Image 1 (cartoon, helix red, strand yellow):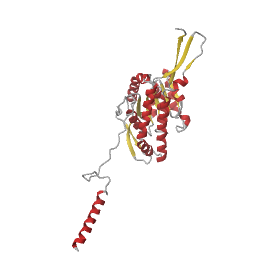
Image 2: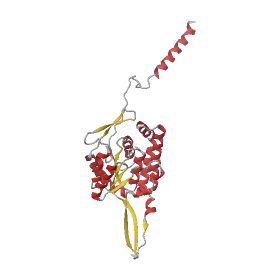
Image 3: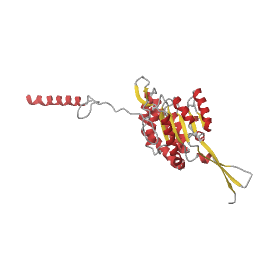
Image 4: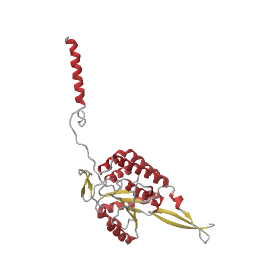
Length: 318
């Protein structure tokens, strides 16, 4: 009788041991202690590096439920000057890259976005999107990168021309990048609006600095990490975080910025932008009120908005 009871007691103890081993998923393996998660630090992106703002200032970002998500850098005009300097230094080499090469790099950006889709969806959910709406926005952003990657080596063929002239010359018009483009990202579309305003500028050989949406900056900083790992040369894209109204006057008035794409709708900001941009004949492009998820928010004409037309004359017969 004793021999018949012993195996049953041993089996019961084994089952109890198994239940205890899986009861604490948050415990560390080996020592049984609980651990704190390693929270992400959201920095800015300048010249291919991730510094903090030189001022040390930050603002607290809240989720849709009122919890603190992160302390976000509050950039100053010194950070903006550094970003413009980095963009200007990177612009000649980026413009000299072949259109095919720029297209391949943008396609690589889309690949990296695809691989990090859950992370971007989480960040969109934190600010109030539903799970399905978050996934839809990330997928549209991926598709938009692929779309413009395809246009990289085609828009010149479509829009450049041989012009009729009344002389013994060939007359050619081609497009070339305007230079450094400042972009004030839309507040209502943290990822898709950012991609839709940034990618058309850089696909044509411009470099850019982006002022991320102040209330939704997380996707912009994470997108900078994607760019950093996607063969985009340092300085081609620079990302700053701050309320747009604090940096817009300095951006619009900077003499080394050639165009500003403004995706907001504040009448006072638009008025100040247009007044400051007149100082160095800067191009002011207004894209506020766009439906970023629609087909009309993409197209080759968005590339042309930050291009200049160069006309060349060549004598016939020489």
